[in-house]
Image (cartoon, rainbow, N blue to C red; front, side, top):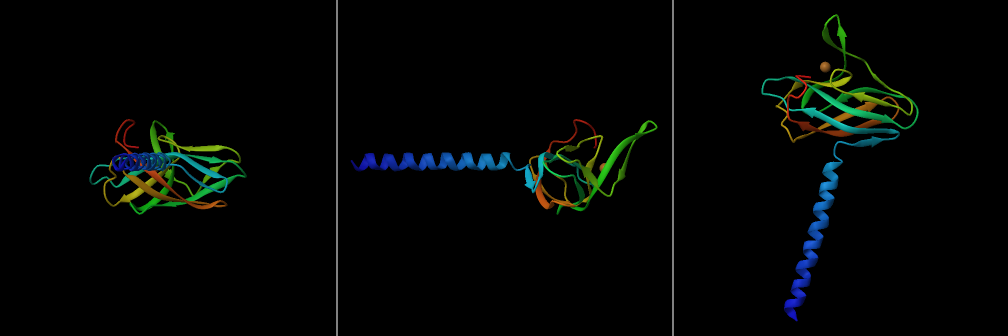
Length: 161
Ligand SMILES: [Cu+2]
């Protein structure tokens, strides 16, 4: 009888661990998403860097479920500065330049992606390692501040940026 009770307890414990690990999995899977007011951030990521590499791009989808807003600044403890950049063809070279703000259209989506608008980590302090989660604080003109974690993807499928 005592043996049976013990078995039951072990089973309950296993069940509890099972639920707990499921919960942790769900939390980590959502780590790259965030929301503040009517603004949702999805599919955020950055890429691994090599030692000595001081810059890296940050990418994500910004979804606005309400009135138009603007991303006005970003910061992260891993870099001296996080700038807002745009990238475009000028002649036959890709040029990047800093912009003051990134417009987020009303009930629309703006995608920060390689070759277009992006965040730029400047003065990276220690190399970004694949698998890490990089905290980035985004500031919107209307919605305010939100922190999103950018998973670091292995370097290199579409070049340096
Ligand atoms: Cu850039």
